[in-house]
Length: 245
Image 1 (cartoon, rainbow, N blue to C red):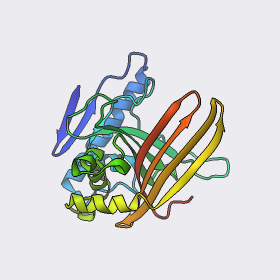
Image 2: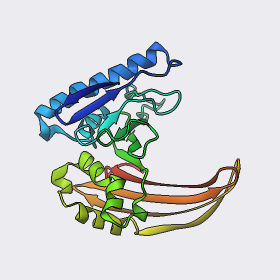
Image 3: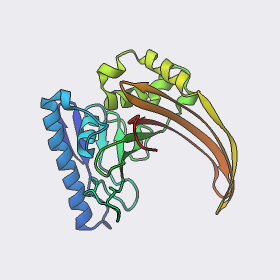
Image 4: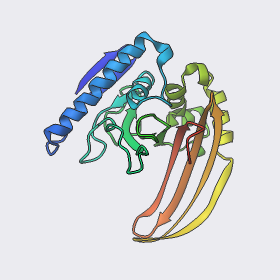
C-alpha cells in the first residue's frame, strides 16, 4: 500500500483487482492525484475548505483533513473514480451524478469490511456541485447510550470533517445530546411491501436539524424480507437545505 501524508491528510492507494483494465487503473490514479493536489492547496488556504456546494475534488480533499480516504475498490468490480464531465439530457438539463467512496479513521482498519471503514456517497444534483454527502454507519446512534457507544459511531468526526470544527465545536457530549434528541423526531410505521423475492416489512426512525446553514439528517431503518432475512442500517446525511426535491 502506498500512502501520502500531507499534514493531517492520509490518502491511500492500492492496486485495482487483476480483472480491472488499464483504464480503471488510470482513472483511479488520476482521482488520487487530483485530490492530493487540491488537498495541498487547501492546506495552504484553510478558509477554502468546504464540502457542500463545491466540486467533488474540493469536497473530498476537505474531508481528507478529518478522515482518511481509502481508494480500495468499493465492490468486486469498481474502482475509485471521480465524476464524469457534466452531461445533459435532450432538453439541456444537467444529469445528476453519484460518487461513492470509503472513509476510515486513523489506521485502525484497512479492510473495507472493517468496523471503522464506512461506505459514503456524494450526490451532484447538477452533475458538478455536491448537494449532499451521506455516510452509512456501522454502529447505530439509535442504540448508543454511553460516550464510548457514541464515539464508535464516528458521527462527531464526520460532522467536523464536513462542517468544520468552528461549526461543530469541541464538546462531543453536547453534539451527541443534540443528535440524540434530533434522531427520534418521527417514526415510519411498519410498512409491508411485495418485492420480487417475496414480502418485506420495515420501520424506521428519522430526524433532521440545521447546523451552520446545512441540514443534518439522521436515519435508522430495520426490517425483514423473505429470502433475505432481517436487515437494518443507520446513516447521517449532510444536505444543502435548498436542494431540489
